[in-house]
Picture 1 (tube, one colour):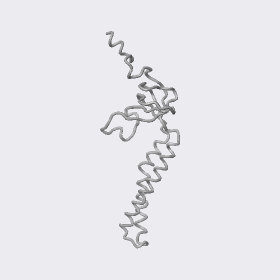
Picture 2 (cartoon, rainbow, N blue to C red; picture 1 turned 180 degrees about the horizontal axis):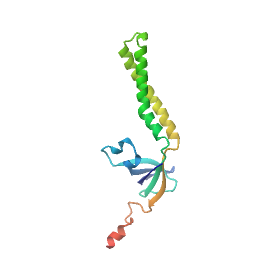
Picture 3 (tube, rainbow, N blue to C red; picture 1 turned 135 degrees about the vertical axis):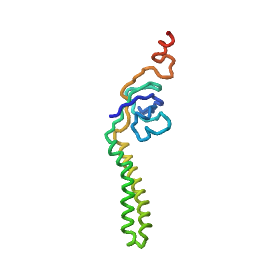
Picture 4 (cartoon, helix red, strand yellow; picture 1 turned 60 degrees about the vertical axis):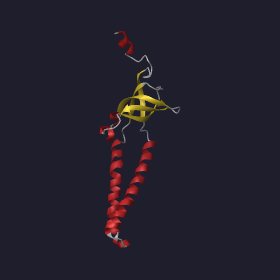
Length: 155
């Protein structure tokens, strides 16, 4: 289970929210890239957090290893397998080996993309969505009376 923190950006009527979080909380390949520091993710909101609250969320990571292999390995494997199939069987179809290997690689890429979309649909149906588990700061960030501000003004 991965745990992160973020700010509720948008609240929807169906019990979902959009969280603005640091992309380093997501443990994704793009976490190390030079780009925007924030990412918006969808999350379940069982505790009723409102816009602007600072919250803690959990993301189940039961399918992370399999997901990585499926996303990166399976399409490449399909391209290689179908390319080799085209190379070996191309002459029986009357094509040059290189041309049939190229056609097989393109077909393998399409097969890999279709399988990847089917896997993505299967993962979406599983319970892999982030869920808010705790409200860290009750006041919303847009409010003037956020924690610590009154102490700063008095000192």
